[in-house]
Each structure stands twice: as structure tokens, then as C-alpha cells.
Length: 123
Image: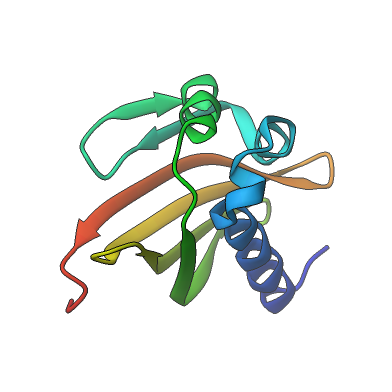
């Protein structure tokens, strides 16, 4: 069983992986991290499933991302809510608030839900 701190560290590592351009271009790795029933509410108001996200990432332009204010709340022993701020280092930079729900299945954390909300970077 993970302690609260180790779950936070582990989920931060997984979220950071999903922001890495080379990982985003690896359908098999993204598929490992997302649950079959995965749903995303994107920053532009669209709803995506696992297949749609994997396909969309293949045509995404590569850019560097960073995250801050990362936190995790355990909702149940095998369910966690991760929240953070993300910056996509484009010109101009894109700021967003993000939340993900992760579930521990067969010893592996899988993302079941993700939401991104664009901000002006000052909030």
C-alpha cells in the first residue's frame, strides 16, 4: 500500500510523463496510462475518449510543458484526484488548471478522467 506522499510523488511522475512530447507520441505508453473508460473534458469544451486522445496526440505539435502547485487528494484507498497548474511553453505561453482522477488497478495507476481549463496565468 502506498503512503499518501508516495502516491503524490508517483502520480506527479505519471502526469509529467503525459506532458512529455516524446511520450505523447507513443500510443502504447499513453494507452497504458489511460483506463479503457477514460474521458477528458478538453480546454476548448470538447469531450474525448481514450481512442480520440491517443489519435489527437499523434498530430499534436511538440512543445515543452511544465507543471506547478501539484497536489493529490485520496478519494478512496485506490482513487486519487490530482490537481495542478500547467504551462505549455509556446508563444504566447498557454496556462491551464488541470485535474485528473486516477484509479489503482492491478497495482498500476490508470487515469480515468481529466479536465483542463485555460486560464490567463494570473489566477
